Image (cartoon, rainbow, N blue to C red):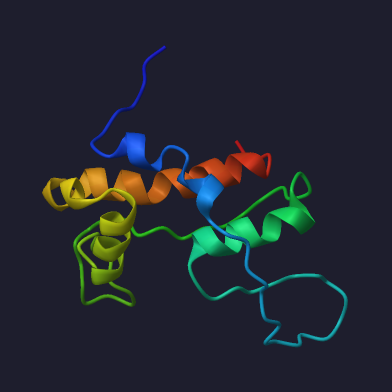
Amino acid sequence: MPTLNWSGKDKVVNYDKHVPCHVLNHLYNFGGTSGNKIIHGDNLTALKSLIPLYEGKVKCIYIDPPYNTGNEGWVYNDNVNDPRIKKWLGQVVGREGEDFNRHDKWLCMMYPRLKLLKRWGIR
């Protein structure tokens, strides 16, 4: 079976296990009992924090990842050279991440998120 490989994969393949769960603060009151949630913040942290309540119960998740266009002047910085991504890569991957191309960086960022989605039962 073919496997997708990229620089840094070995460092992020199990990163999802090291992301701590956080208590999500309730900031909005929509009234009603829909149970819907709007979460502002890093989607990796949010996904991990929701697993204890919703694992196996969710049919659809909309996650808006950066498309890696390099556009820094859009609604949010859509460039994997964003300082926050660089900092994260430095902490998780180390100095070798400085030499990655933008596709390697994007895959390193997305892989842990996709692994958590798999735990939710979404394929």
